[in-house]
Structure formats: C-alpha cells, structure tokens
Image 1 (cartoon, rainbow, N blue to C red):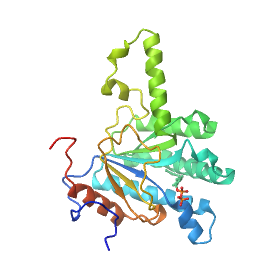
Image 2 (cartoon, rainbow, N blue to C red; image 1 turned 180 degrees about the vertical axis):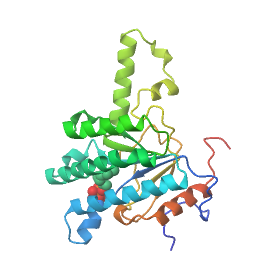
Image 3 (tube, helix red, strand yellow; image 1 turned 30 degrees about the horizontal axis):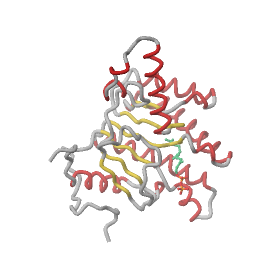
Image 4 (tube, rainbow, N blue to C red; image 1 turned 45 degrees about the vertical axis):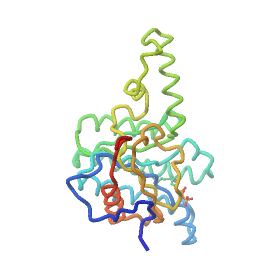
Length: 249
Ligand code: FPP
C-alpha cells in the first residue's frame, strides 16, 4: 500500500532538486493522538511536534526551499484546556529564545502570521526581537501562524481596505488581487506551492484560505510527531509528479 494517501494516479519518484516548491506550508496535525496512543498528556505530543518543526525547517533550508509556513496555533485553539494552551505558548517561548541566539548564524528568518496582540507581552517582545533580527537577514524564512485564522485574516483585510476607502486613500474599484494581498498577514509572501497535512484528516481547517488557491495538497496518515525528512521528500516527489496547470490546459 502506498505510504501517502493520494488521489494522484502518477507515481511519485525521488525528489528533483532542480524543481523544488518555493513555498511549503504544513498543518502540523496529530500531536494529541500521538501522545494519547502512548498514554501521555497531549502536551507531550506538542513538545515532540515542536522538535519535528525544527528538524523539518532545517531540512527545508538545506534542500533550498525558500519558505516554510506552519500552523502553530489557530484562532480556534484558545478553546483547548488552559494547560495545553500554556504548554504550546511555553514551547513557543523556548523556541523563540533559541532562535534569537542562532538565527543570525544560520541566516534563518522568522515571521509570524496572525494577530499577536493577544499573546503575552513576553511572547510579543520575543516575536518583535526575532522580527528585528530577520530584517537583517536574507536566507530561508519560516513563517509561524500564531493566533491565525484564514477567515479572520480575510475579514481584517476587508476592514482595513474599507477604512482606507473611508480615509480617501482608495476608491472601492481600486481593489484587485495584488492590492488585496497587501492587507493580508502574508503580504509580500509568495503563495504556498505545496500544502501538507499529516494526521489523516483531509480538510483545510481555516488555513491560508486566500493563499491556497493554486496550491497542491498532500495528505498523509503519519502523525506530525512521527513526520520525518523522508515524509517531506515523499510529499515533494508527489507534488513534482503532478502537472500544475493554473486553470489552463
Ligand atoms: C495540532 O495537533 C497541533 C497544534 C494545535 C499545535 C502545534 C504546536 C506545536 C507543534 C508547538 C509549537 C510550535 C513551534 C513552531 C515551536 P492536535 O493537537 O490537534 O492533534 P490531534 O488532532 O491528534 O488532537
């Protein structure tokens, strides 16, 4: 049986390093189930998941992928038990502190997509520090979606454009895709070419709703804490085996 659940009839070969996706996005799903299967608290799954993020981000950088975007915390995840939310925020703090020490040496940029104003002042300050360091770099960029929701992003963009119209900056008919994108959290980022969802579910879960318009999707049964470099290779090979037409023929 094929490792990856795929509707593609084409067989994925090895990764072609000359035709890599420029931007990969990942819904890091399955941490809770991974922990439950081991009789561990859910936060143990997030701890391993955060380490897998580090491994996969490093691998993306080494492969020559320009952008990796991960869904770390959604606008809906606040509904989770407080100790789980605290554990995820604690992991973010730890990884941001590590990033602040190492990102300049490794030429790795970090960017956050989402409304950070509801995070603790400490996390906001760490995010601001990583932003400042990133501004001095030009290498691989990891985007961390934090308190992010695709609908929230679109609503905010619409509100901001409407406010600019009221202020006389634009007429309403000035709005096109390029202008609209400047109002998104992802302003300036290329759209993801490949979106990977480990964990067995096959849905988008409010992730990058605008940006996913032409993305290729790969869904895998592997839970995120079990996700290895080989799984990324297989997803990229699957992406490369597909024929991207952008609505044309
Ligand atoms: C989804 O799995 C995962 C999350 C909501 C949290 C992801 C967060 C991390 C990996 C830690 C912090 C990240 C970084 C970038 C340092 P789930 O809990 O919904 O799993 P389940 O579907 O099995 O319950």
